[in-house]
Amino acid sequence: MIKSAHKLVSSAAVVVAGALTVVACNGPGSPGAQDTPTSGTVALSVDETFAPILQAQIDTFSKLYPNAHVKMTFQPEENVMLDLINDKVKVAVVSRELNAEEKADFVKQSIVPRTTHIGIDGLAIVLHRDNPDSLLTVAQLADIFTGKTATWDKISGKKGLANINVVFDANRSSTARYVRDSITRGTTLTPRVFAATSNPALLDYVATHPSAIGVVGVNWISDRDDPAAMKFMNKVRVASITARPNPKPNDFIQPYQVYLAEKTPAQLAEYPDLQNYPLRRNLYIISREARAGLGTGFASFVAGKNGQLIFQKSGLLPAQMQARIVTTPKL
Image (tube, rainbow, N blue to C red; front, side, top):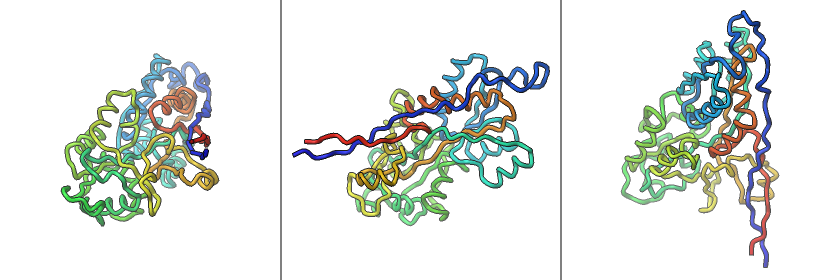
């Protein structure tokens, strides 16, 4: 007898956002006249949780346009937004859109910032490789992050691990904000939480402390062609997560592209075994340039065909990738 099995396949429908050949508005003798969409110098600030994927974008862009010099710094999200508002950089890459206060600041400066959705990221929950509790629900994560669950034996009943230590990449980071906003829903975090100095430091800490649990952007461990990513991946164990209240073992999923792709309510209703990875977040590039300069050119590149293919290769989801369901026969 033949039964139907479901497999989700991602297909990229990449949209080229803007042409790189836009002519700058400035005349030959005006300030910034040498700054075009493909040449000149521009300062860019990036949420440090996206360092690997943005470094790959910069490397490719620079090879294609050798006269373009993008000066990139990696910082916690809060510092990135301050630099953008204070005109220390022309472009920022973050995991959220501008809030009301930030929009008001730009209105005061008579600046109309342009926000472009460029990808979808997943947050990976990383554990020590010897930790047996690798299947976690979002409700259990909330209890861990608030301190309601303070020891690992409260998860599975297994003894042997000490008190749970929660580690983030940095103070004022986007991952910590996401946990507060989307997992603990504003509840104060556990006293046993601290910030490492960087994402690599976070991964090293989790790899050497059996009771630790960390939160990283999946691009640090998702690109299988990147030796650095694979080195990090081999150090830790990635937990499988579900938002379902009474899950079965096969309900737990990891932040692979197939689960980062947004499934519609109709798709989820028709194929109840499918679900969305619960710790998803959007990725945006925000430009404050008042003219078509190098910042605009780089933003167009990242949102265009080549930049979106880099997202796809890295294990993140391009902004324009759509999900379709393919039903295959199973004997």
